[in-house]
Length: 501
Image 1 (tube, one colour):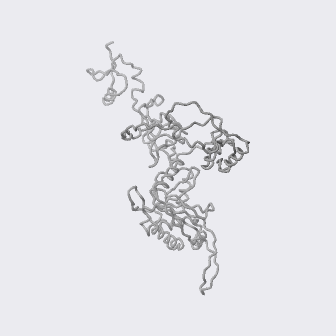
Image 2 (image 1 turned 60 degrees about the vertical axis):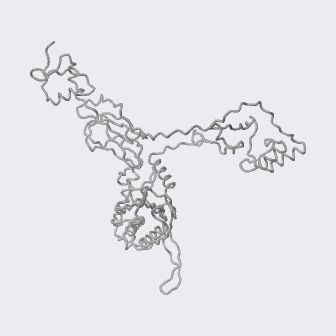
Image 3 (image 1 turned 120 degrees about the vertical axis):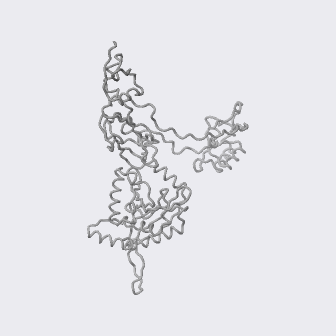
């Protein structure tokens, strides 16, 4: 039993074995000729691959946008047991803006998929998968128990308010069961109390079930003719006064409005009084949150102008002859960017404390998708040509509809444009996308007859192609006078396309 096996290997590996946490001791003893292993050790365990296993690499739900709080696992692109290299696509994650691919940061084997594809509302920092190094036993990897989303930041404890003195509240008379309840007008209530009558003896003919003065006078006439008698409620046994519960304290009046229509409850589709719940995506929830914050915290001001597109349409036709396809919206984007370059006071944002001058002119273009409105960005639009802007808009719009926008393709921007002309909308107002200060709402171009004068001064009717643009501006940084001057310059640039070259 005193015999021992000799182990010839790198001393650094042996030091790793000696200090390996969480494993049973292999009884390493230093002998005369080197390191030896006690014969009492479990040789079968020692010869397995588990003795070389290290801690797995954790894949956590990342933050892929500044406003992201949760994410959805759309699809896993690797399977358990499949080798991965740094930079390989692991899975697709739906953020609050788009579907983004998560890449591996280390080499190894995808050992465990903790959160299956299709899972929704995964908090940031939650464990979604594990990677082990090559050569390790990936089938028996253990999921760490100490990994979870970071705890919410605890708010400082507020001192409890001192208990208020109890105030006796008079107990209201309870409604007698079985008696109809009406909403009484003040005049009707006085008449009924004077003649000891009850509204349940008549019929309410007022709007929304109100018992009116005329209804009460009819009851008085019926009483005088002897057709009805006085209605005096029988005294109820005295009840011990008790303090009303919070629900009773906030209850409505003694004659509540009838609930019309009845409260809907979940049920079968198309059934009366039922509804179908529509699940909201992360993108929809974030859009709703940001729009609500914008309308409630940003003072919107609006300015509208009509622009003549005659020159733009002529240039566009000339470009089509050269097989260059551009849209009217591309000219609008270019005109807005050129105007921002001419008027840098409008190219600003509000950072919470004051205005901030932006050194770049990046135009956010609103794109309607099945998941909501997204705003991909045309970078440095003032320096781009019309055809280059057109190509960028087409490529980014397709990526937005496919949910493939990268974070840097939709985050930021200095000015937004929303065009509903292709949907037949003449004009509308848009909601500002904070922290930007302005958004331009563009309607369709339409033919309009205008009275003009020819070279000889004779009046004549001439057809013009006009569009209506409405700029929503943050009054904290772009006041009405500045917004008016911006629209005037924008109109001049759009009606003279040579300025856009």
